[in-house]
Image 1 (cartoon, rainbow, N blue to C red):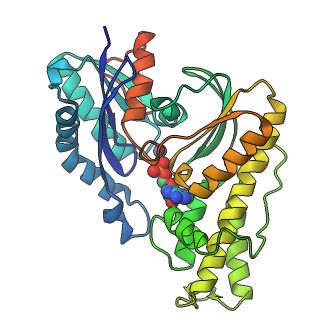
Image 2 (image 1 turned 120 degrees about the vertical axis):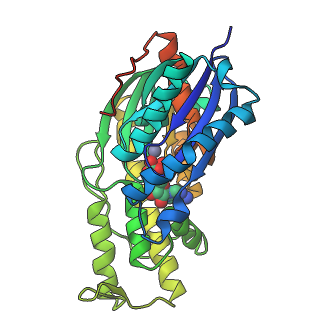
Amino acid sequence: MALTILGIETSCDETAAAVYQTDGTIKSSFLFSQVALHRQYGGVIPEVASRSHLEKINIIVEQALKNAGISLDQVDIIAVTSKPGLPGSLLVGLCFAKALAWAKNKKIIGVNHLEGHIYSSYLEHKVPFPHLCVAASGGHTSLYLVEGFGEYTLLGQTLDDAAGEAFDKVAKLIGLGYPGGPEIERYAQQVAFKDFFNYPRSKIKSLDFSFSGLKTAVLYDLVKRGAYDMATKTFLKPHDNQLKQQVASSLLVCITDIFLNQLSRALKQFPSVKAVTLVGGVACNKYIRQQFTHLCKKKNVDFYTPSPKYCTDNAAMIAFVGSYMAQHDQYNDLDLDIF
Ligand code: KG4
Ligand code: ZN
């Protein structure tokens, strides 16, 4: 008989809960995004995030159960994100999950948030093993070789900023809204994703990534064009829509090229891989998805990427990881910690 898993995710700025069954059905996936709360600060404020989780966690879990048409008594296992993330935020979800597990005598599983992203494609697709996974979000940018459920090797990761962070920082630089990724995509689309400024592509020999130099390159290029004042940290052309479009488009093309370069290199190093997945918030980007599709077609490997709602933080991916961990009896005790 299929087991029912309640997933809980509070590692950053989304309070999320989901119900997943081991027969492969997503019964519900529900969340509250704090993005509007953090927008005024241009980034996530940890203290604000954890207090908002505390306020919302009960309502979100109740709603996820309601949407799934079940009561808490019908849940077999609670899977909760236990690392990595903002400590204050993680603690809210973990303590809530522990309290439920203790009061209702349920089994509990601590799930690694990044593992959640790595397997998020499986919520909708049967992805063959072995495959390469590019995970890109606001906090992480990594490349994995994935050989089975729970069997993955880190091949490379960002040495400085995450890709999403580069989008967010450059967007802030030219006065676009938060989060920057979707804004950059919107402006880039208006000029058909052309590369105007040919920003430098990082020349890393390994499978790692680096994006902080790119942000600096954009900054210096703006200064050179008389569009940014370093002394006052001010963007001097807030009404120049064309410049914003050109910066956004050039940045998006450059970041995509960096991904494609590293992916090509990894495909060469691991010729036995059957597929590629692209996951995490940055995977919402239609241009990046399209370019990955083209490259994979050329290299003769399948390409999978989740629907946008499963690219960004969600609890369905946490419940999914919980489902295979449960099948291997990888349960935790109530002393489960966040690190
Ligand atoms: O996975 P996620 O929701 O949260 C983290 O775990 O960080 O990722 C958020 C990041 C942000 O940096 C945001 O700018 C980026 O994903 N993002 C995008 C797009 N949508 C979200 N980046 C590029 N293009 C997008 N359409
Ligand atoms: Zn995430």
